[in-house]
Amino acid sequence: MIVKRIALNGFRNYDFETVDFIDGTNVISGRNAQGKTNLLEAVYMLSCGRSFRTRFDRELVGFDFSSAEILADVFSHDREQTINIKLQPGQAKKISVNSVKKSAGELSQVVNAVLFCPDDLNMIKEGAAVRRRLMDNAISQIRPRYAQYLSEFNRLYEHKTRILKDWRDKPSLLDTLDEFSEGMCRASAQLIRYRASFVQRLKKAAAPIHREFSGNGEELGMEYKTVSSVKDPFASVKEIYYDICEHQERHRQAELDSAQCLTGAHKDDLEIYINGRSARSFASQGQTRTAALSVKLAEREIFLAETGEYPILLLDDVLSELDEKRQEFVLNRIGGGQTLISCCEDEGISRRTGGKVLFVEKGRIK
Ligand code: ATP
Ligand code: MG
Image (tube, rainbow, N blue to C red):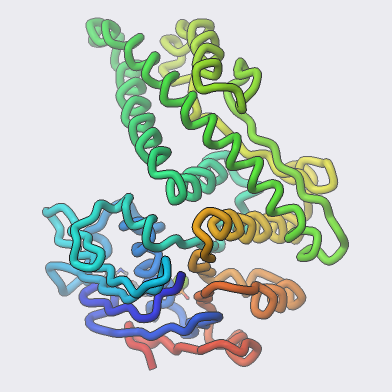
């Protein structure tokens, strides 16, 4: 799938601009604070209706504008499609595909995107939240049901946390505690089942990429970690549910004491190994960066297998963080599909790719 053209109106620092992309590599070059990331952000929005930088749509609306609009022509599932996203602070955002109203979640049936930004380079060493986000973003795009379970889980989690924090002042809150715990166990069981099979696929896809990318045949491994009482994350949802409930029962008192949810999929992790050793503990900076990129490229392969098309790959400012050999790999060896790469003008990267180069200056494409 590719985005052929995008028109931005009042989006971030783009007052009114239309950008044409080619199938293949597009390098978005420019000095700092000109609008490179903003442009990638707009393309990313086509895949899920929200930004990767903020939860607040109002931040996306240009400072001097009362609303923002993204209009894009994409080619996916063998046809041209037009996506329109309108953001107006104070109102629900309006999304349509070929003039038919859609929800944000439904956009993943039209466009998929894999984003890689500097934060992701450190995903292996960072806290588990980053790696959970990776799983959540990817699975939500290929399994709409997962997105529903996830938002249900998050709602329960927030509510239960509030009960655990406030019950001393308001003991009547405890009346509903077990109901929320039960709901969280139920939703967790679903999430765990999806995550386990996703990680299995990711591991399979990432290993050969990493072997080539690392240049010296490093072996990349992965393991999904979840609630300790879950004996087999590939078991039926029912079995997983019973296992989690057991954990919940054992930790009920500790939850009341600590005012924290201790049982559930919110503590899951994805452990990455290089040559059998935990990358988090032992890998060098270069190794973890290479591994992170391998994982992202593997995500792309999963989308390909699912939809028959490569997702749009968005690389925001990551090239400068990689050495020349790895830059070369990214610029010229990522085959198939469309790639949008942002980088700073003075890096000379634009000269080293056969793709299209777009220069951004103050929200305009030169
Ligand atoms: P860098 O190389 O530093 O990453 P960039 O080209 O990626 O720079 P962007 O993140 O795209 O820069 O931001 C470009 C400009 O857009 C910034 O100056 C930022 O302050 C501005 N900006 C952000 N949000 C809005 C908004 N809602 N309205 C207008 N301008 C905005
Ligand atoms: Mg940027």
